[in-house]
Image (cartoon, helix red, strand yellow):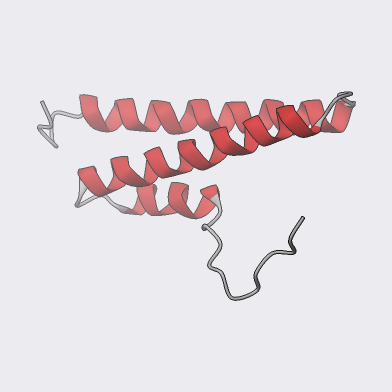
Length: 90
């Protein structure tokens, strides 16, 4: 395995996208993009944990549950934006 390249950009944490989505009141499409980016990153993290963990201990299980809850909250945030009549995204 190669060590990580210190000069390579790393993706921002999903929390950054979630915060930016909440702050994007004036641009609902940008908020939707941030929510989607956070869901994508969290989904990749879950898939990586599934592959890496052959035996699941309670800490790993709790982390996975929290990640799943965060994904659900982000998806609900997207639905709320789509359903908000003030944004008229229909």
